[in-house]
Structure formats: structure tokens, C-alpha cells
Image (tube, rainbow, N blue to C red; front, side):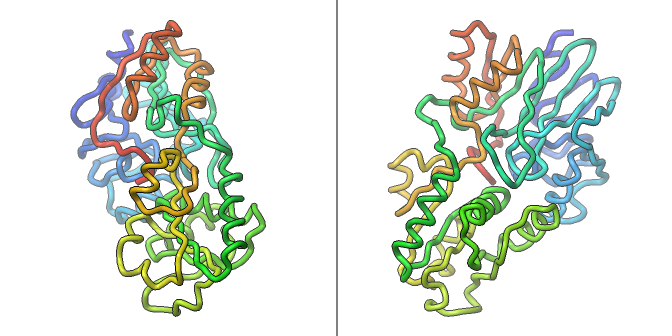
Length: 336
């Protein structure tokens, strides 16, 4: 079977004709397989959804209990059959519950990696390389300029700044699902045991991470309705990036504006956002991780879904690997 007969792009998303299902569709479909809970991959309105238990729970938290007509949980490593097509979910290392999906039929193996990273993350299961014929990858940071430093080093810079400026609060912009909890967990591992204040948009997700065994330590609300400026001197406050442009952010004393993102590698981006302390912490693979992963899969063909496709496709071609960009629309660069 030709790989394109097993999986190919349609306006709704990646479609598998023999199994009659889509992977991470951007429009409502009859049967959807979902790699992870970020809103550009996990959308409401599908008739049937197959995903890991954690991704289903996260979708219910973010979209409401009725986000799909029916759901089915896929255990990591378990192989299920749809229309004679075998599908297996394996960890992607992106956020809690994230998975790659191996699609097998008539001897052809295609891996849809979703979004993924290889660096350590204390909030989710690590990525597992899967041998395959075709590897479908993202390329959010698919340029050689993107090489992420160890996240623990970036958190160490944050802790140092907190000690240097005890009269100021540190406001960290971090995407609500995954990045925020990873930053909090890394702070705990760095020895920061004081209460961390969180925006209300993070409450339920932080509670869910805790229920899944991700220890976040003492958290407290940092809402407009409670507390005063003096309460937050020397404090670390975590919230979604969107919250930093509204009145919520103006209550904190002389805040140090921080943002945790792989895009903080680009100094101009940090400057444009008014970020005083950029933290290069990404939940996506950097350039080295992308090419390392392609090599480890042994794939003879690579398809690139979104991001900086051209450079990665060119690297594949120079290394004797057939490659093409799928130019899928509807996926964002990072987080949700």
C-alpha cells in the first residue's frame, strides 16, 4: 500500500480512508483520533473521539462534558483496530496525556507525532521513538537557529532574579495547559517552596495535574478580587499570556515581566512583547531534536505538518530522505 493511500490531508485534517477516521481534525467529523489537548488539535463537536484518558479529561475540562458524542480511551502502547487499520498511542512528551499515533495497515507504518519534544519534562511521559516508514512531524522550531537550553537553567535565572529583586513581583506568562504546570514544577525542583500565585484560568488544570500525580506545591489565587499590591512583593505569579494586557496584571508591585516560550530565543520577539526576563522554555522540539528524531525513526519518508517546513524538508532531502510539506492549516506555533 502506498503511504498516501493510508493517510493523506483533507480540508478537515489528516484522513485515513481504510479506517475512516481523522487525526486532529480542524472541523467536526464522525471519528477523530486526538494527539493532545491543546485547542488547535483537540476541538469539540466530533461524533466519536479516541484519545488517551488524560487528553479526554482535559478536553472535558476545556470544552465541557459534552465535547463529543462518544469517547473512547486509548491506553499507551495498546493497539486498537478501526476498519482493519491498527492504531497505537505512544507518549509524545509534549504535555500531560500527549501521544503520537502509529497507524499500520498492509505492512505500512506511519507515525503521526502531533506536537512533541525530547527534553525532560516532569509533568508528562517522555517521548518514545517509533520505527516507521513515514514519520509525520511538526516543525514549529524547524530552523537551526532554534536550540533550546535546558529548562532547568532558565528556571535558575528566574529564581536568581527573584532573590535579587525581593521588592518586585515576577509575572510569568505561560500557556495554560502544560507550560504553566511545567514552569511551576520546575520551580519546585529548583527549591522554590513558597506559595506561587496563579491566574484563575489555571485553577482547574492545575488541580487536574495534581490529581494525576504532578505535585505543584502550595498555590493560591492571584485574582483582582483578593489581596493587595503589597501581598505580591517578592512573589511569583503565573498566568496565561493574554492576561498580561488586562487590568489583572496592573495590581502587582513593579512587576518583572517574564514569558516562558521557545520564541524567547528571538530577542526582538521578547522586546515586542515588553518581556524583561525572557525564559526559553518550550514544549516543542528544537532543531537538533527534530533531526535526531527523524533519524531515530528510520523513516524513508517525512511529511511536515506545520511550522518552518522548508528548512526541515531541505535537511531531509540533503540526507537522502524523501520529504514534503503538507501545509496543514489550523495549527498554531506553540501552546494553545
